[in-house]
Structure formats: structure tokens, C-alpha cells
Amino acid sequence: MSILVDVLLIAIAILNIVLFAKRGFLQSVFKYGQKIIALVLTVILGPVVGKLLYNTFIYGWIYGWVEPKVASGIKSVDELPFIVRQLFSGNVNWEDTTEKISETVASPVAGLVSNVFGYILVFVVAILLLKLMKPLIDLITKLPVVHGINTVFGIILGIVASFFLLAVITLLLGVIIKLVAGNTSFADAVFGSFVFKFFNGIKLFS
Image (tube, rainbow, N blue to C red; front, side):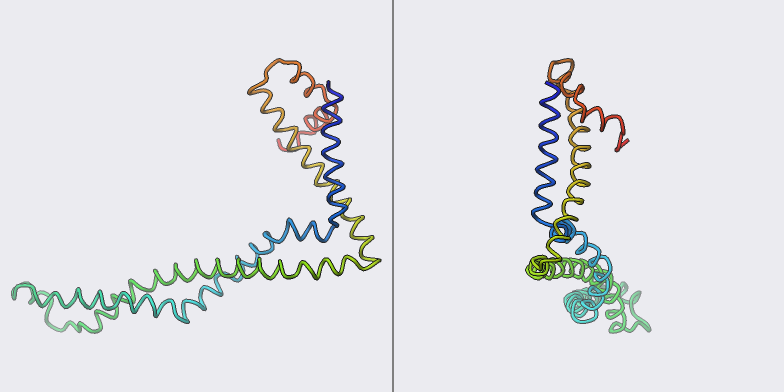
């Protein structure tokens, strides 16, 4: 029974290596790395684009929405009783007050909205541009010299990926069996597996 577990796990690893070899090193890195590249670009360029959006139109748009409401609120002071109005009167410049309150409200809101849109915009554009690069990478890897190197490094990457894949599978199997299977023939077969004992012995994730 343990031999069957070993055969199944090794077959999974071999299949994974074949897939990486067929796909090639560059395509594999591109497939699994494009979102990471997009995230890195988003972290770097997101604030820059956000500031550009803020200065270009978002602050003006939000200020234009806030200012009439603040002005309307300040105008309502005129409707208060005379004694109360005296508390707000004097040397107060209501136009400047309206502008300052509107700026105080609009600035942080516009900053937040600009950053959110900046990050989203950069991420979406980065993903689209990276996807447009895929045909170029496919074309490059079809060149005779590049194709061979790409396949060899694809196999190496597949071996590394399969190592970690088996480590994760054996870890999950161990946890699930301890929680569910208990002392059964299936548990004995898994725990007796050479592959399981190897990864359990090196304790990669502990």
C-alpha cells in the first residue's frame, strides 16, 4: 500500500516537471510571476499615479461637490435668532471660512480616492501590458538556441516546484490523516511511504 502512495506522489511530481518542461522556463516564470511583477509596479507607481489623479481632477471634483454643501450650511447661520447670529458675526470672513472648511474636508477624501484609483489603474494596466508581452516571449522561445535552454531551465524549475509541491501535499496529508483517518490501513500506508517519510523528516515548513 505504501508503494502505491509513493508511485502516486512521484507521478504527480513527474507530471508537474513535464508540464514545466513543455511550457518552458520563461513562460513558467511569466505565468506565475506576472501578478507579482504587477504588484511590485503597483506599489512603486501607484502613489505617483494617485498624486497625478489628485492634482489633475479628483481634488477639484470632490471640492466642487463639498463646497456648495458647506456654503449652504454656513448660509443657514443667517436663519438663526439674532442673539445666536451675534456669536458667529464680527470679523468672520464667511467666504474664507467656506473655502477652508471645504479644503479640510475635500483634501483627505480626495487623497484617499486618488490613491485607490491610482493603485487599481496601475495594477490593471500592468496586467494588460504583461499579457501583451506573452506573444513576444513565445516568439523568442521558438528560436532554436533559446528553445533548448528554455526547456532545460524549465525542467530545473519544474523539479524545484515539484519538490515544494510534494512538501505541501505530504504536510496536508499528515494533518488530514491525524484529524480524520486516525489509526487505519490508509494512515499506515501514507506514514509508511518513503516520500512521506522523507519530507516529514526534513520538516521543511516547521
